[in-house]
Image (tube, rainbow, N blue to C red; front, side):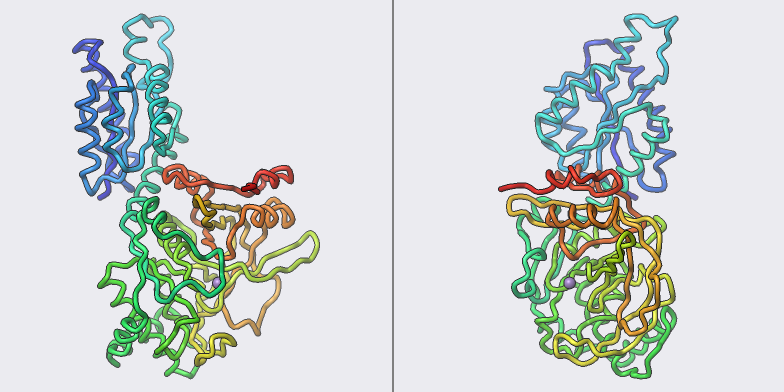
Length: 480
Ligand code: MN
């Protein structure tokens, strides 16, 4: 079970009695929040910070505990912030500054100097806020009475995002083949990716994967085919072509699990030794939470895996997609998003059908793939680009819609969506911001989740939605 540590600040200036009261209030608060967070993470109270030494001890404990995904801090009394510097330097995990009080209302008739000295987060939390800001530590501030639904909701989101970041920091990303020739936006700084997000992005020889795929037995393929039969509708009688994809999935699964890889990228320009472009195989793996990026797009593979982790336990679909083509009927503009083959089955509104059809690119045999119409509802579209000196996240609110008419000749899975606030502003904003044509679409995540992820990883974020105006477009473009 993941843990969050709760660290409460005070000092030794107020005497034993005051510190006892701080402890009791902190315990009460912990009990309340612990109950409200228990399905996501366990909240544990650490010793009150009264000195720099105690702060270092608490933060070291949080940093060293592999189960701990994040830290929540709150200043019950004033707590001089130089006491926090060395402790905070020990912490490299997500941090939430809870700006709250033990009491909801002021006891107007009883309040005296003792009460005010004991309950002074308005004072202490600003002192603490300064040092966190001064030290440039990415963090989240949750302000309000701790029992308020909005505050509890923010803490719950923090627990989920912190878990996703913890996953991110252990994520290994494999590249089979390099970035697609000449393509810009899918490339990126892998060293910076590891420094900022923890992604270990490494190259693996396709030949080693092919060797693994060639070693798959017919019995293993039979078992995988039974899995496909139970999940999907077999629309083709070209069973040998489907078995070829089953072989790829088994080989990939074995290779990824041996190297503890959670996301991978391949490219149709480097399929030496494979008869088909992996389609069904990759779709099926994405359905199991494996991140995937086509054309060597390691960033979207990793981001997809992290976002699927963040969405875990929630209703809705999350996965990779590519912007493809538009219906530009004025006032009713829609986008059709899809890919050559690799659209995650999470987006399926209907039971996916397995079919074997020509691909028209890559010069390989006809690949098996899953075909379906997409889910509908409110969602987000998220991408990450490398601006040369920093990563940028771009998150647009979208509405996923049912395709207006059948597309009987389109041999791939697809989703359709409407841009916000409208086509002209929404898509122009995406272009001004340098948004990629690969993204993660989700009906499970919201802009708030992404904003918190961006804050806690120190990533620039541009959001697009109903609150975006034409005037905003100017600021989305950064002149270098
Ligand atoms: Mn693509």
